[in-house]
Length: 289
Image (cartoon, rainbow, N blue to C red; front, side, top):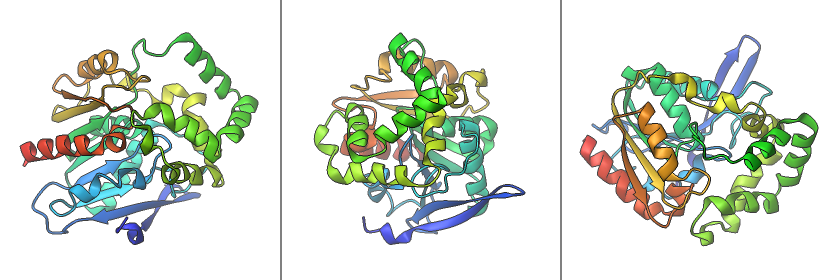
């Protein structure tokens, strides 16, 4: 990607004795009159997962994207990973860049983190654009899946499974069910997702959702403080988070949310069906303008 050389870093002071290096990028005109956008990737993702989206908007908008702590090229310390931690990272980044208001574009776990940030800082968010968000599951998780997460949560089995899947073959098997268009799961994407798994500390972040699933849920919010604009953009073929089950859950949390279902797209909708996703995002941003 043409912006690949634009990697930037900031040191996030998590505590008196812990600093973490966070990777981010900036795109677009610094003097854009429009509300800036912050793209937040999902579980296992990184800035590059937005490579087919950001270039469609960086001529008009000031855009930021970052690797969440524990993922991509950001540091991977042994800390308690959670949506709250990611929401705190969003807050720290916006303070660093001096951004008073922002449009948050999030995918999956990144979208759930954006929701929590908006709940805690409603005045800082112009709009939420949520691609297949996680965090609310209703009854979509069957007994077998719950049993699997219980196994992964046990230290020894979790570490063994991590070792088994932390390679290109394991990554390809994990990515395939999240795509409708299997041609998109190519060697470049597989290597992109496999590389961070070799980093020191990767096991801490990657196993966290299965070891402490409640830390990645939005149930505790109750009535959301954020009352602004929200859009849910969903892949019709998402088997893990089927839209007919999960969208109503999110519309209970965010009653003002509009929903768009894109056909022939699965969980990684923004990459799986990037042209359709970009067209919908352009429509939403035009409405906000």
